[in-house]
Amino acid sequence: MTDLSDEIQEINLEGFQVVSGDLFTNYTRTSNPTVTLWHSSISFSKASLTLLNGCERIRVEINPNSKCLLIVPVTIKDKDNIHWVKGIKDPVPRKMECKRFTSHLYKTWSLDPEFVYRTIGRVVTAKNKVMILFDFNKAESWKQSSKARSRKNE
Image (tube, rainbow, N blue to C red; front, side):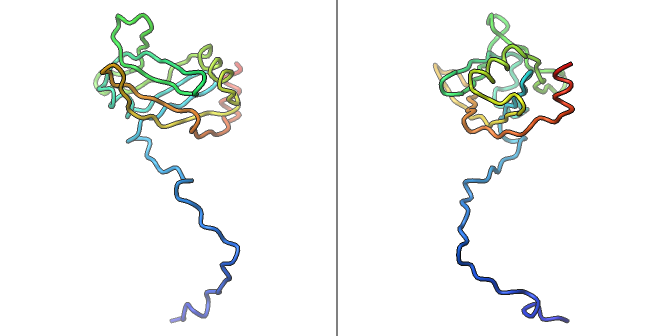
């Protein structure tokens, strides 16, 4: 058996800096509410639906200055209600095509249309109503695939 101390090289640690653990995103998409924004559509995670007690309809509100999006559970009576779920037995949020809305967000928030953005939400309350707030100042982003971009331009 070989002695590992003969094979492992000793190095000088001068110049190395510790990277703060806060710089790494560590979350599971299944347990946290998330929203994903494409240039022509939007989708929410199942955790978002669960946190809003499986409500079938939401209202979306935005704050153009703070780059925040808020989803509020509503009934069909709300004139701005959006049916955001699909499925009856096991409902899940659906990906919603909304090019006019998302294009407006990309322009207002100076987002790059070549990128997809995702952020984690947090439960908030106002006037005794539970809602989910998504802050796009802290969004992760990645370049949309060329295949997806070509479909978008069709």
